[in-house]
Image 1 (cartoon, one colour):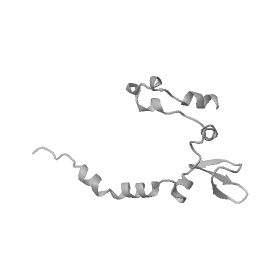
Image 2 (image 1 turned 120 degrees about the vertical axis):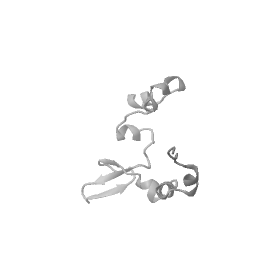
Image 3 (image 1 turned 60 degrees about the vertical axis):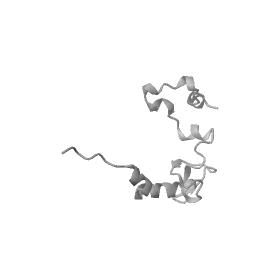
Image 4 (image 1 turned 180 degrees about the vertical axis):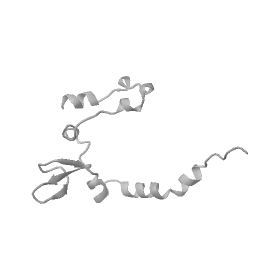
Length: 103
């Protein structure tokens, strides 16, 4: 495990949410994040020879974070969730009632 990843692993004593929610985040390079598998299904590789993007991270080349495996192979229903959010799920519409201005 790299030094950056060791710093990224937090315990509940390390988190003070009064300082903001950003305290739970770590800024890592893609190669550092690949070390613990957290971006395994989120990255693809730029294939310079063919001028194309290859899904997965099993080849050499520049990494791209594009969530292709998740969307293409339905790793979890991310596309469906995003579609429902974009259309405004009927339950979300019922739950959201904007305040009317006082007259």
